Image 1 (cartoon, one colour):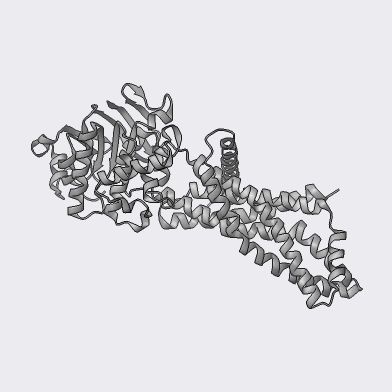
Image 2 (image 1 turned 90 degrees about the vertical axis):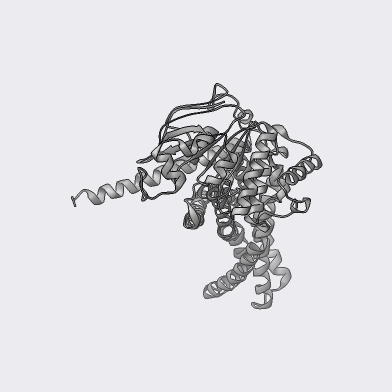
Length: 260
Length: 248
């Protein structure tokens, strides 16, 4: 083996990764371009809204509830080291709406939705259902991808908003029942220190994360390999890629929104 | 008339089609036979544009399949897929009437449902199958639903990809008979691919044998048994010895 072999292997991996990013970017652009051209399948869009939005609410809500409660306990314990226990309500609120609500909500949706989209579309591919769509004069990008991507982009911010509220409620419940905060004071501190941009920035993050989740699910499903193993690999890739991209996008958006 | 001229297609190093030339006259039923992996499905998918050939020309009624309005082109076709390819998330009647519920052939839902039920009856299924989901049906019933979907918009050309694979001999006979009846009744051009010789004899007007990426033999079904072609003879009699390698 020559000394240059590891460098060549590294180069191939980098080129492969760049090519994959390019393919996914083209896939996303193609999806968006279909939104500008009729027909639009409203029924499929409605079903995707229910599947992605409504049916993800319990998972996102429970995640937010427990995270809000744990956050209150942690901030109280940490704050007590320098007599700052009173910041619990405001830090819980800001932490939930700016960061934990969108990121944890996005990750939970990635686990639930990206996997389900990739598995469904991957199975459709290996059982020739996508070929059948084409022969029935129906563009798979319009019928399968666009409704899901649009639904996720619209539904995840709503889920994030609801998750924020539930998370703050989790913090409130722990603050009032375990940490002996006055209920009125807790709510006042929550509202007083929360700014509109805190909430809006979290919702924008939610929309971006929703887009990422659905694009990853659809891309990996559409490019699924043959058989059960191919679908399994597509499902795993969709969840992993969506999760990593959510965390990367979160950092970039946080830099854009809050580094001044 | 469907015309393929010197069509080549390779997947990496695997040269599946190496110059397929074939004519399927309008109103005729052509069956392509050949061993597994010889490119029968690829040939049909090339005609439909699901797979792009590397070279060669494919024309339908003198017009290149890659030119013109794709929706109008596809509206002329119906296809029965090997595994049925029914949409799991839709009830049977919506599978059958899929083309009538959207696109240029869109009809009101009640009318589309009525047509779907009529087509289900035509393939021997009762209306109570209409509201079931594909997963609730047996393999034979799924094939029938696939057949009903293929003929629902009354296409001029129908493709059948391994129509009897996975069915018992009696159900295979029923499906073969149905296909023949429907093709004759509609006056459609039909193209089927199979390695089931009972299907060949039931469905075909003409037979083409695909081997090693080219059409090895073509002729009327009546000449199948005395063609004199060693490849065809080996295939139709299912012999391990002959010019076709048994282990590929």
